[in-house]
Image 1 (cartoon, rainbow, N blue to C red):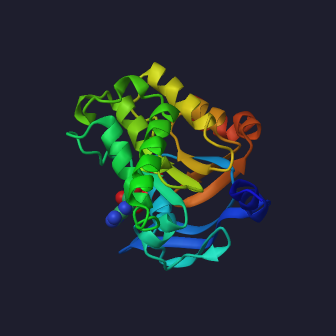
Image 2: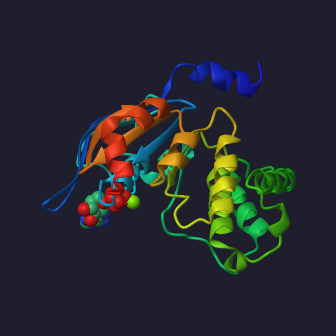
Image 3: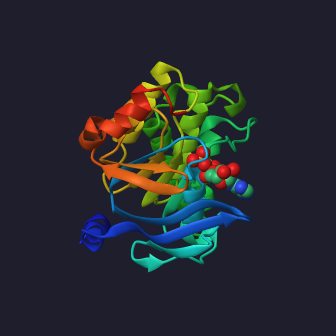
Length: 260
Ligand SMILES: Nc1ncnc2c1ncn2[C@@H]1O[C@H](COP(=O)(O)OP(=O)(O)O)[C@@H](O)[C@H]1O
Ligand SMILES: [Mg+2]
């Protein structure tokens, strides 16, 4: 049996994420309260909500950057609530940040190559020459997947904002991700860059699930199979894009211009 088949059988019907009663406080502030959320393996989910709703904090509890104050988190069935961030990364969890963490002086291909090498180093330390070839090939493949072939040798500092976000997506794809958290990748993008982003996300391999935090309702409805709406640290609505689009309360929020 190929690894890919074994993986898909193993994960058939499995949940990538199960959050039960997750809360997070910062001193007296309750940033997240009683979040219960399940996302299937391979599922694409969007999270919408105004600034301060707790979306990034939710990501931080899932990644381990800021573990929850209460509740449990399972990743592919395993309780990771108190795992350090790197243990979750090792299990295939990735994220992108709202603020860019790229090295401006590195070229696009070198940035991607280093991310691929960083992930593979521990596992293949005895196969140095072959590993480097495989890593280079993976870097070239990711360069193409995020549509940056034309910017291959450009320094990251010279890229447009949208191209930087594309590099970040490539970095999140390094190694063997099973699930990715995208924190507002479309923020500040020009319309053409936004279209590229939608194309890149919708073309990701089917076994890679993700949650995308997104302000733009149109983008969220196009890149997700289900949409979760948050407000004041809580989930207040969840549904398919059709259900969300037809929802009177959602229409009042988004057409009334009260979000943002
Ligand atoms: N590290 C932190 N320390 C203190 N307060 C925080 C921290 N991170 C987030 N918060 C607060 O938690 C609430 C939710 O923030 P956040 O999760 O960033 O919202 P969103 O991403 O939906 O805009 C906000 O009131 C924010 O000020
Ligand atoms: Mg945020």
